Length: 49
Image 1 (cartoon, rainbow, N blue to C red):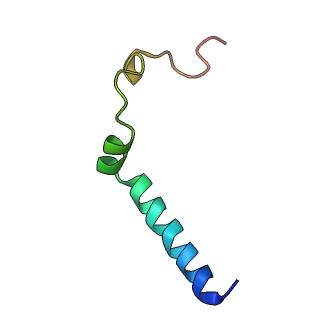
Image 2: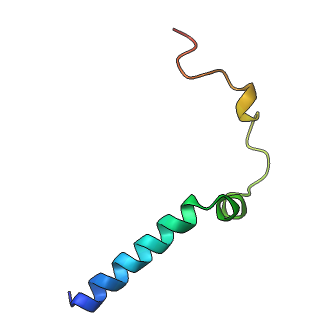
């Protein structure tokens, strides 16, 4: 693989990570409708122990 291809791949990965960390992008990308109760209504992890 030529060095330019490696640099391009790394740049795309960095851009994807930045987009995934962006709250506004996640809100737009993950908008699917109601998926269940809000996080506050869910029991904490390990509450059944």
